[in-house]
Structure formats: C-alpha cells, structure tokens
Length: 120
Image 1 (cartoon, one colour):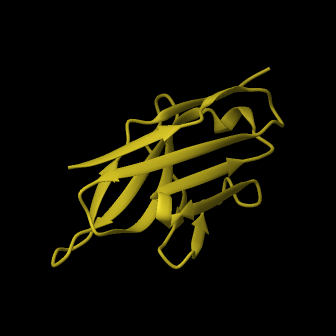
Image 2: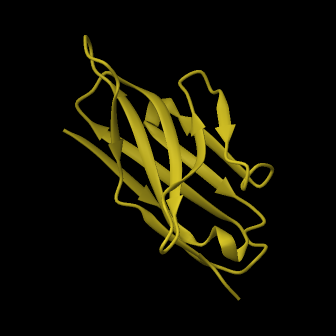
C-alpha cells in the first residue's frame, strides 16, 4: 500500500510564512507528479501547485509569486514553501502523489491534509 502524510500546517499571521511537507511511502517503483491542493470551508478543492519528475512546476493563479513547490525524489518528499500568506489562504492543504509501479499506469494517492490558518 501507499501512504501519503502531510505536515507543517499551523496558525500564522498575515504576511508570514509556512513550509508544508508531503512524504510518500510504500511499495512502488517511483513517483511521477506531486501536487498540492487546498480546500477552504464550504468551497470545492482548489489546485495550488504541481511538480513533475523532471522538476517542471505549475501554479494556481492565486498563489503565483508567493508559493514555491519543490521535491526531494530520494526522500520521496514534496515541499510547499508559502510566503506572504493571506487570510484567504486559510484552508486544509492536501498532497496528491502519482505513484508509478512497473507495468502499471500511474495511480494517484491523497494524504489526509494539514490545516493552515492565516489570522491575526
């Protein structure tokens, strides 16, 4: 099986920073894409950022220039550096990992999420 665990959430003041981590473990060959999504209360899940195995990144419009996604493939871990946080960034942040097994198409696994609250 595959486990995806997010960490690093918390309470931060507007203008502050947080760094989220997403660690994948289990029985698989490698990881394709690693992505972050977020869901604020009462809203649908929103795309935040994605990074592929080659390091190419794509960001949602609301976080461009403030958030940076990165990964350490050896550690099977992705990171989301969040700077200049705003109250509207408050949400549960989820990590989605595209797992590759030999002879099988990539499969997506989600973590349980980590809460980020931006408030003074």
